[in-house]
Length: 474
View 1 (cartoon, rainbow, N blue to C red):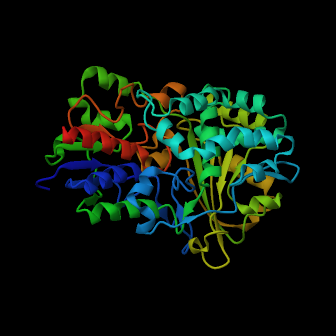
View 2 (cartoon, rainbow, N blue to C red):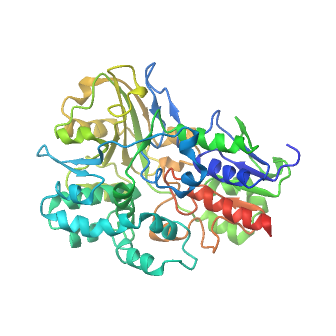
View 3 (spheres, one colour):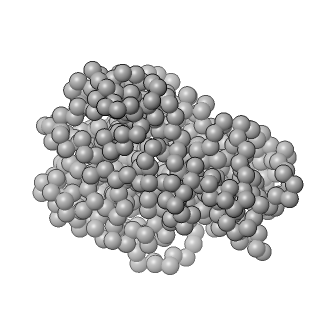
């Protein structure tokens, strides 16, 4: 450990991205991870029966293929092969039909009844300039934008509540429900300011680059990042929990892929009181209740077109979805929760024995929910896929407490590493010109609690590494 330039604590996608960037610039980098393997929220594990592989947390990556960080690090040359299902998303309805989110905005519109033109008008301009939008919107709020007109045009709609934008732009229930389900990825009530941003960004991502996933499982992403790191002399140590900065070897730079609670635990003694107090006010959002399935056959969707989608939203009408998210915010488990389903094996048969399948599902639940959401989750699956329980061979069930025990960054089951309130979306974890920096020289933050937030895209680590490099060069 002698002669290190940088230490990264945490080997999730953001920590590994930061480490790979620093190592490519010639720094001597060492990564320390508490778990027995790398990946954080992007691991692939045998959770049910022999021969079945399941994504432990994140399963579909709307911003993965579009990530400028992953492109710059050349993950595809390191073995990441993106699989694009025919449809990014299906949103089935009780009448046995489904709205589809397709690569083409016009083809998407064909599944939306009277709102075909409105969908194209809203999403096509953002998709056409998606790379520029990511560069501007995902780089921290307290900066001078290079494309102010693009950012201002996006902000006019993005700062609205998702429900309000859907009512204003769409006349029919299908488009409103499709947009509401996409926006609900932000795990916020849909009448909250700023929730439209999630629908716009993730919707535009589907049209610009799809909602793909890596062949073989999400583990391919951290494995590729680690390969880049090692190719440039970096090292990774697993199975070691860091409890204090004092125990780390000397290094000019330290980057923490930790949520604010654990930053305070590890570095609190060195942080100025005012900054530590601001970290202490950081809020976490609702949790998820996760189930991984081994199946004897594909999910028997009533809406046949749902079989073409990698992701399926189970929520019904926009009003039902909004009521479910509002109940979660109040600390209640909805009778009909919003359930997100990923089905990989129809498009990637390597994850299950021949002729068998997997399913990945979670329901939005209150923060720290300690009850059993399995009956409500499976009732939603049966509602839109009658006979689903008959094809289940095994299931692995984990509530918020189990998820947090496996990955401390998932506080209370919060997979986004922080509540996506408008303030915390713009200024996370605290309001700073360089939010990845801290008042302690050489100490930086790179978890999803920094901009641009949750998702497997590596951009939190990318920006943290750029900030660390700027300090290193000074």
